[in-house]
Length: 273
Image (cartoon, rainbow, N blue to C red; front, side, top):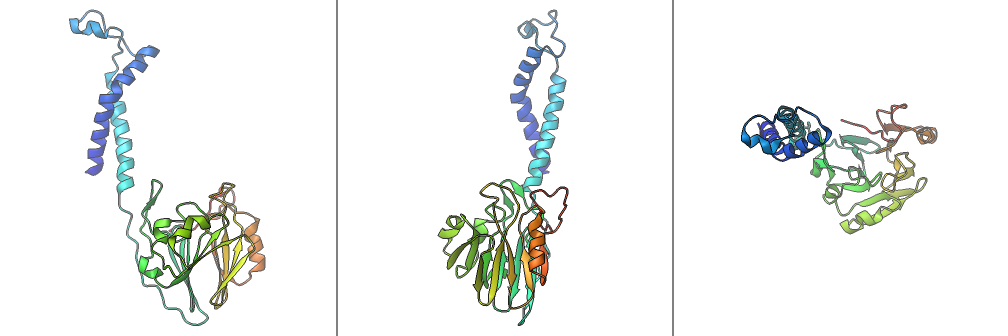
């Protein structure tokens, strides 16, 4: 019903305000059959005006339908996700929970790690298709937050405001200023090849290939210690860096870079729900 109402309103507005513009364009280019001179006296003022009102009405209806369909989809609530409790973790174990888009919660016995946490419903006009698979409460014991790059669907400020302030947050070089005002216990910038250790867990930063813009330059991470190792990567095209990580990290159990279409993925590969 909402889509029908929006479609009707857009069609009416286009017909009211777009018709004069369309007639001027048609008249300028000589399209359509001009109104005949003989006829009602009131038509004399419209001499030379093309008689293509039907085309304008069809166009108004088509535009109304397309805009209404787009707006209806944009405002539609995301599909519900099946939420399950985060599993307990014992000594030497690793639990990985996928939250949708690039969000991952990796939990060792002594440290819970959030990667690119994003619990919002939309970013920059792009609506989320499915609700996050993780709830804010699942991040209550997070001690380390890893951010891949500065695009808003990965460095999501509203979600970061819901993370524990006692956590350490790791960001690519140049991104500390974006999160320093959020009040985290520690903000760390890393370059590819640099590492950080927290509660016996080592995090090694690795390169990505997502573009040359400042917001796109970022990091992937190898996490090891206290259990199986894991490699997390937000956005990246397929490049030789993946093979380099694989050669160095033979015990990596999860490469969070799915859908690696070698031909099409020049700059953007990530896991999707």
